Amino acid sequence: MREACWLVALVAAAPVLAAAQCDAPGAKVESDRVVVVYRTVPAKLAVGQHFTVEARVCAKGAGPAPTALRVDADMPAHRHGMNYRAKVSAKGDGRYVAEGLLFHMPGHWRLLFDVDGGGRTERLAADLTLE
Amino acid sequence: MRARLLLAGALVAAGAPASELIVFEPQEIRRIVSHGPWPQPVLRDPSNRASGNPAAIALGARLFFDARLSANGSVACATCHVPARAWTDGRPRAIGLSELDRNTPSILNAGLSRWFGWDGGADSIWSQGLRAMLDPREMGAGPALVAGVVRADPALACLHAAAFGAGAAQRDDTQVMVDAAKSIAAFVATLGSGRTPFDDFRDALARGDRAAAARYPLAAQRGAKIFAGKGNCSVCHFGPGFTNGEFHEVGVPYALGAGRVDPGRHGGIKRVQADPFNLLGKFNDDASGASATKTRHVEMQHANFGQFKVPSLRNVALTAPYMHDGRLATLRDVVRHYSELDMERIHVHGEQLLRPLQLTPGESEDLVAFLESLSDPGARVEPAPTQGISRCDR
Image (cartoon, rainbow over all chains, first blue to last red):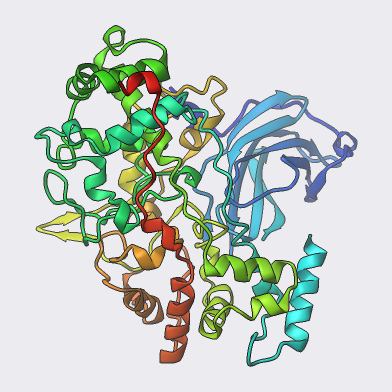
């Protein structure tokens, strides 16, 4: 059952939120259709320490309503991802919490947000560098 | 702090007298400084209620050296983890009740690790201890044997009661065996290595003390520059412990002969997820569940096949032979391995981290000099007898 939960990164549908509701403080990544505002806990990331991502997902303009979020990360230059799979929980109102992330090397990481909505998935990436 | 490091970098890079202190780029200095400070504090293990408990540490110290915990009474933890050999055994592959497939890792500084064993098949020191106790090739013990030893020896039974609050007679065999493993883990967590010549150099760079930094041998300085610079070794051998605590494939063959292979981390994840003594199980004393985060979220990937844990480089000159199967006899062999890396051995679909370093003979010697400077001479010293509990020593 626990494994099944891990595999279900596709999380319950979230209601439509206007972009204005994604004006809350936090880092922001966006496309033509979607906005993700997020913060990490702890705020300052360190190599080898688990962290959580708190995110809010909003539609932008007349874009389709986001229905689910998955969170992952990779190091493009090294061509590898994390060794841990984040578990994403929907908290309602377009809010999500992703737990269990860990960056195991210093360098350039991309925090990846896959947002489902309108029958397609859109990937947004935030660049982070750890020393 | 960052400003101070940059300042130190500027000082060294700008005006270093080449005869004493070579030029380091600011990024090289930041990386070298990231390998400290040392020693690091070892925090109490929340999964182990015996962690830091003096009675448990005394019990663990005795059990660690007690061969009665093996099936035929011939193998103790200390058979492979020999104090005078920096807590390893000097053999290519460990020999317990039979020969194993892997080299014995040192247990010094184990309290700083995330995973245990070359494959990370254990998620705590105590579950790693249980793995060794129960493996028929290592100690071949079982709950009844271990519990019987603890119950039958008055001093051990007394320490057990002092540490866990209930006599061994009142706890079932499996629980007493877990208590024994947690006591051994409490002891092992006290085994940290001390400062090294590198640490003095690192600290001098951190505070911008050129005169003190210049006392570090020139060959080791040049080796440190390779390690933190073009060698990019710091990426995996990261931080004060010189390991990122994770797993990588480094072009070491994992075929064992006769159609057998060592799956490395791939097998380790399977093992830890199936282990009844893992941190997701009922023997974890951490009610918050936070200590099990790694076990809950670790992900099996195809690339894990043939990956092995990045070993700490602290005391590396004292722990030959090298690599997960002990195939390389000397540090020079290890440096040659990375200098002449056979890229054909690296997974095509794996991560892209390594390339042959193509070091000159002089650079290779410099890198060896650097690695030799990471050892604490005290790492081979037998620990002082652990203070027991007086009422148990009668």
